Length: 129
Image (cartoon, rainbow, N blue to C red; front, side, top):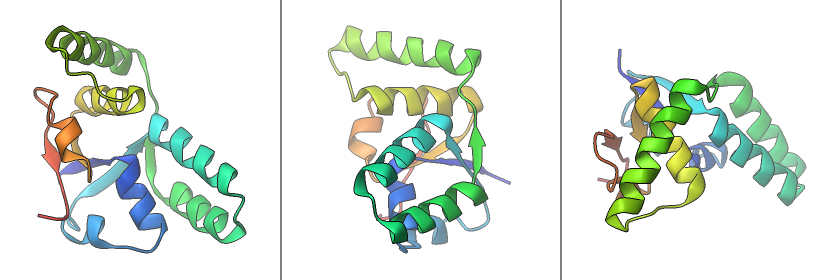
């Protein structure tokens, strides 16, 4: 079974009730990075919506969350240095998620294919194509 890490934007779509990110890859095993969990929790707390909190907490209670560990930090360092050497930096959290995904040997499901495509070796999946 294919293991797919969900990027934050895919999670947001799912929490909002859009099933497209999962429908296309329904026969897969899904997970998130603890970095994505942080981003989602921050967004939930900022918005102060009970409905959003309930849906977000339900999602976070169901999805497998991979802890950012030493292997992930090494992979992220390589990603960051490679991107900076080419002058193609991406957002800090995206860099963290991408490196974590590489370390966990997952494919990344994202709506942000343009940004993540700068990272060599990262297997990307989208749901809009």
